[in-house]
Image (cartoon, rainbow, N blue to C red; front, side, top):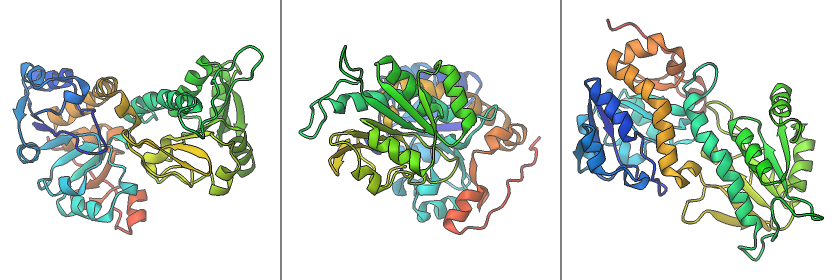
Length: 373
């Protein structure tokens, strides 16, 4: 199979979809890899390193799309990129189609693109690819909160996250007890913060109690407890994920108005719409804005701050799926891996994801795969 890796061109993205080790595995299995020149530079992978492992270096993104049967990338397909897609191509990416423009979804359908969303692929009932990025995002969210508690802005609280003897630590309130939340809690505890976690799922909270030996205060999430937690927080981390759906605003603007002056919101959920009503996407070069005297940090690609780690991590978990499709063909790969099939959003001109079909008023057709042997 011919696999293409274009250079990411959105939101100062420095990650690359496949590290050289992944290219090596595909080439040794008899497949061809086309990578756009400079695609790995942001993660400190040179063209020469990719060439050494058998990749074909091409100098225009358009050529990557023209020569490939399967495209693997990180960011959702943009309006300019969707024009480059070839009929019936396979595209692996963090598509987040539920918050994309309808014209992009329509183009995927018109061209009969098989869009595979990394954030929906499952293994052992977990979102195995997304979890890797979530581990990174959870840790970075705490680092960001700590940074902006310091006197970097006039509005900043000017406090130490872990406190000192005789001075109380900061309160880090985490909404969501998933992978982002767990990693944020671990990182915040390591800094000496007072950590409070809210989630609707009592079993998840029990797991947090067990993992952290009751060092994290766990609270069942409802409008009342969320409002109290938001008001108490020095750092509020939004870590809510609803599979395949836009994240609801569980923190209203009125709640934000009750927060301490200089408190920090890190809305990790922003890549699926955000869980805080006052959030809107920001960028690495312009990461914050202040509203109601509260600092908002809403980068939609947090792992891009550590692109080399993130690129290695993504390769580690995605290569088995790429190899499966390349070795066995798309039909057989989907037929024998139900977890991979759950990542398919568009297929053969139809929407095969019920939530996305509902968002855009499209006809939903259940995925039907037949062996190509």
